[in-house]
Length: 177
Image 1 (tube, rainbow, N blue to C red):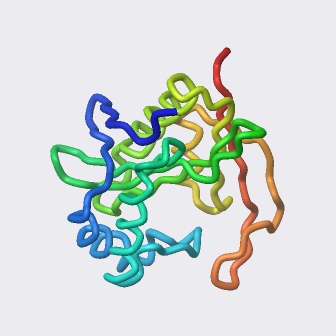
Image 2: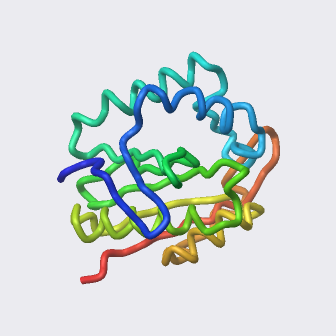
Image 3: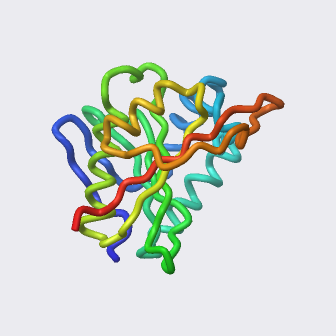
């Protein structure tokens, strides 16, 4: 496994995080409640937490099973995408992504996700890539499906975010043999 390598798409560059990413991540992700509305998870809630998260990414690049990218458009970071919790027994990994609000609705998330799915399955040999979203998160659902993932299951009421319950939609992408 090669881990996080640079990836290119027609409009995007996916690269390793650098320390300078922390400021933009805090400003464009950590302070915007819409960025974590359906996950309840905000690794960029404070400048200190953002710095720690980015430093953890940077430190993890030594691990060939770590996958974490900054998404750039025309030299400016607009999002993040990564693979998490690799399970060697199942040869499976989960992906997650986030695009700044100013770049929503332009197809960047699906484009980045397609590149990561291809890399993880074809080049890294991972048999199955999974993802999930809240049932009310129509945009993420569309991104997952547009990138080629299929709905693999529904966990009714399986997701709670700040006291609100949602059905959790589980998606999968299987390597083409």
